[in-house]
View 1 (cartoon, one colour):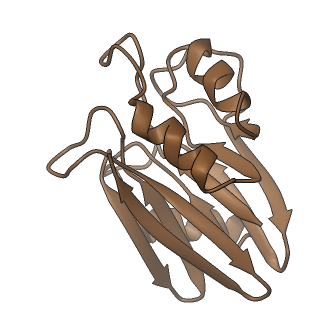
View 2 (cartoon, rainbow, N blue to C red):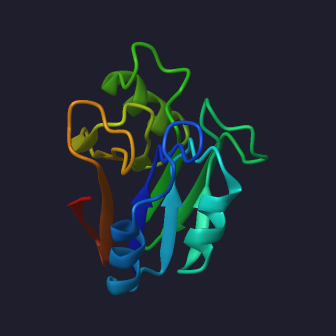
View 3 (cartoon, rainbow, N blue to C red):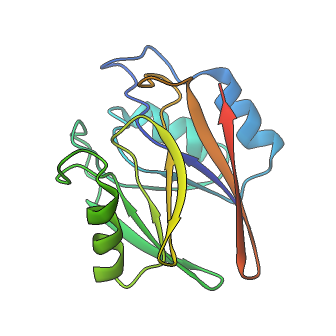
Length: 160
């Protein structure tokens, strides 16, 4: 299974649009599922992404959309927690994110909020943060593609 992973698009509140490269890569990669880790800030993003594949999205601190705070899904041998990351202080604190993932009985966390891409593995917990394709902090605009193969997750950062 192939996933498109995106977060912090902030369309209309901080960005005018989602870059065309994001949609082009998701189409080219033929993703099966798109996960948006919050701060969409517009239903337009959902519509654009849903034209490519099924979308699972959670609410970020800037969203007024009717989305859940977090979602859990199982893909293969992996239990994913999708959670924007707001409410974790300091922002992006890895220890607190690992504890939250363990409390939810998951082994993979897809999170956002920091606008900085990272792929970490700590004590058997994988933390994936795709950064932001529109308003990055200190880095280039990014999102991610993950491929789940049996007992492995192969994730790559895509620069916009």
